[in-house]
Image 1: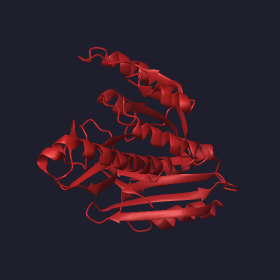
Image 2: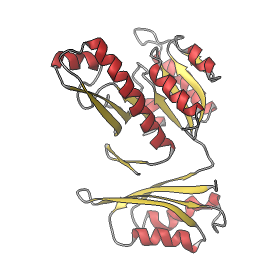
Image 3: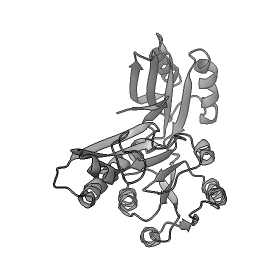
Image 4: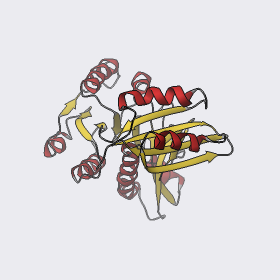
Length: 287
């Protein structure tokens, strides 16, 4: 496929933005292959994702960011991100002891559903090394003490690895540790978590047991970007399944695992495709 440029932007809604951006691309011999836009009437904000082929495009790609900044950033109070389809995202997966989400992510990656690289898997336990070895992916373990006295040291080592491997984003595939504010700041809206609950219900530990005790009739799973507020970051994907009074905490866990795999994979896929735009504590998911 031809290499494309992908522009994600948002700014206060005003007349002429679509016309200006598309004219800029076509005037410079770019062929637009995707355009989706949304206006939040409550916030008065405009959001857009536009993609065009770079073959024959007149502006060199190393100058393109500067052109867009000069022409539109100040004029429209625009914030934007610019990506290229030939630069594959590099995903690091963090795990603890549960394998279902890890297996699902790696199987989809192996089947080429995810256009990304996975240079490393990071864990606080040895338990899932055999899974990484099945897929020939390096597996790194840093054990965290129960009193968390070595947590800062562990995260420093992890950050060194992430920088060495040029990691674009992190997926917490049932990684049972809280990420520090320092790591979150290094990867803002680029750490994806799967929470085994339909947030904002049942935040924190053992949500299926909480759901059982509450007697709910629906359980869910939520994938969201990690922020400093526990389980409160921008939601990317959610799904639910019905349960009955006959269900036990154990059966809820089994049903929930299926949801978790699907919800997480959908969120990861949208992120890799650069189809997510965050604004405040919400996401705009382009089709």
